Length: 187
Length: 187
Image (cartoon, rainbow over all chains, first blue to last red; front, side, top):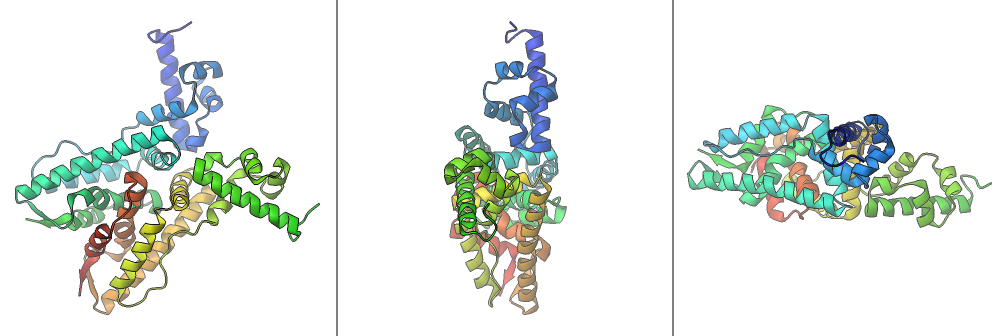
C-alpha cells in the first residue's frame, strides 16, 4: 500500500487537492464531496477516503492552497504602503478562487469550529498588522488617526469586501482613496 | 391529496419552512436537505418533496422568511436617520439568523443564478436608498460628501459587515460614528 512518501501517494494527493479546489470554485463547498472529487481527480473513491476520511478536512486543505490577501511587511511612507496593499487586495478579491474561499470561510465558520479558528486567525493577522502600521505612522507624525486603530481593518477592508461579495463589482481606485482618507488626516 | 388551500397543506408548508430556517442557522445551507428537513419538521420525506421538489428552492424560501437589514424611508436630518438605520443594521447583523442568511447569500450567489439575482436585488436596494438619501442631504446643504454617493453603501455597511462576518465582533457606536464621518463633512 502506498505511504506518505511514495511518489504515487503524493501525486494522487496533489490531484485530489487540485480537484477539490476547482470544485469549490465552480460549485461551492457543497460540491466538495468524496464522489465528485474522485471523479474530477481521476482516482478511485477509496483513494480519496484514504487521504481524507472527512470531506470537511479536504475542503479546509484545498482552501489553504488558495493564496489569500494579507498585508506585507510595512514600509514607509505608510500611506504608499497602504495604497499598494489595498490595491493588491482588491485585485485578489476579483479572483473567483479568493471570493469562493473568503465567502466559504465567513459562512462555514458559523457552523464549524475548525473553520472558525482559521477565520479568527486570518482576521487577527489582518487587523494586527494594519493597526501596528498605523500606530507607527501616527508616532512618526505621518498621520493623525480619525479612528481607534482597532477599527482600521474593518474600515479599510470592509468596503472592498462588501463591494466584492455583496455588490459583486470590482473596487476602483476612488474607493481605495476614500477608505485611506477615512482612516485619518495624512501629512 | 391536499392542495394549496388545504389547511393541512399550509400547516406542513409552514412546519417545513420553519425547520429549514432552523437547520440553516444551526448547520448552514448544506444542512437543508429533504431528509433532515422532514425529520426536523416531523413530516414524511415525500411531503417535503411535494412542497419543494428542489432543496435549493426550499433554502431560498426559508432565507426569505428572515427579515434582512434594509434602510427605512429617509427622514430629516439625514445624519440622525443614518445613525438610527446603521445602529439597527448592526444589531441585526448580530443575530445568528441574519448572519447565516447574509453569508449564505454572498457565498451561494457565486454558484447559483437565482441566489445571485436575489443578492443583486438586495445590494441594489441598499445602495440606491442610501445614495438617494445622501444626495438629498447634500442638496439641502446638510452634508458635503467626501465620496461619490455610489460608494456610500460599501463605505457605510462594509465595515460592519466585515466586523460581523470576518472579525465576528459586535459593531460598537464608535465604528458607526466613524463610518458616518467618512461619508463627508456634516453641518
